[in-house]
Length: 457
Image (tube, rainbow, N blue to C red; front, side, top):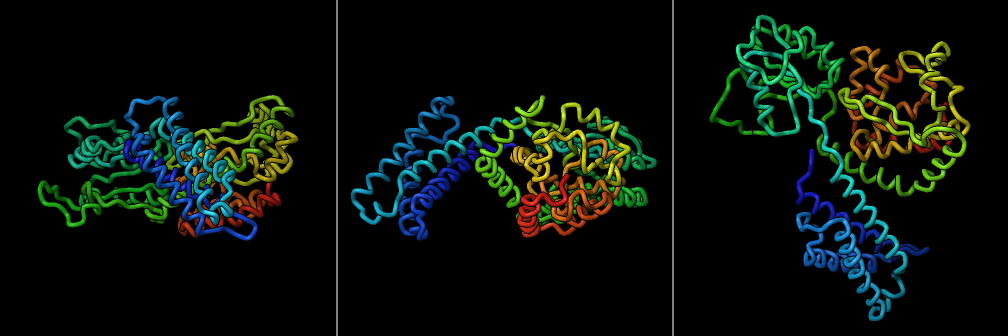
């Protein structure tokens, strides 16, 4: 969902204020500790100058007509206007002069502000997210009306198709085509990207079919919605509008914690952005090593299946020869993993530098870009490749009900040392018992596994 101009202004302002506070702490950090009194005074003083200056100069006003060059120039003016008073205070406040290292303040402040500008500019200009795909089961009046309401809601959603219940006939044109009967729900969910299923049938006439559809949705982990009641109400409103704003009660097959999910996304953005900055020397070194030791591109883009079956290009440092996918067919007989996943401990396709970066999961670091894009999260089931998903049993597809991640229970439980069936059960256990605290525990457990290369190949 795209954010409004005012939201972007507030995000930029809040980010810059946090940067000023961080720079103030860095400036007052000494071997004996942090001079908190000076840090807080310096931080709030700098924030006051910055906020007042930005308001006067309309720094965060997106509709001011300035181009990129104008924004850069104005940012430099504000940087100068903020740093100069911080330097001048050293002449009048002796304790401040002793405790504040202005070199560290300027270094952290300038680098962080530039990084934040690049990040927000990228977020604002990236392509809009594709709409959520809705499947409606039922082509009668309720089903048709539901599709029209979804189309008129002006949200980032669209009806991808309809499934017909027994004895139903559509007398009027539907907002989308009919994909088959309700009995084909399982096959449709396997071949189409579906974010939610609306069960718009008569609970008396189609009870058995609706009940079976519920079981299929639960098995796949696909959210579904049931009519709140059999009556359409034009004027009266429920006391709790959020509970059934569209006349349906919505169900999910995973632990739904809106506040924790929002905090998880914020953590993903902050942590992945910081990781890319802090690990940039390693990223550059690995990129150079790959280019010097083997032919081919630095990065390997592989189609992976994300949440609800939508594919995306997952980024990795290339650790194999260029024709690795072609050679895979010849090596299938030597597969050491059960199920549809291909794994070999001594895979001949892996390059010399590739074996090292795979052992310590360095090849996975570019996936922090996928996290920033919203295609992945830091903690979540690993994203599978499409041909593996095509071989999944119905219950195994439930791992697609959450956003895929860089690390999860599998990574800290032996990785390639555990079988495919156990791997799937571990992911289901994670989904069923998800919490933010569990995510942090898995992150802390991942660190020693990566450092010692446990279970990697």
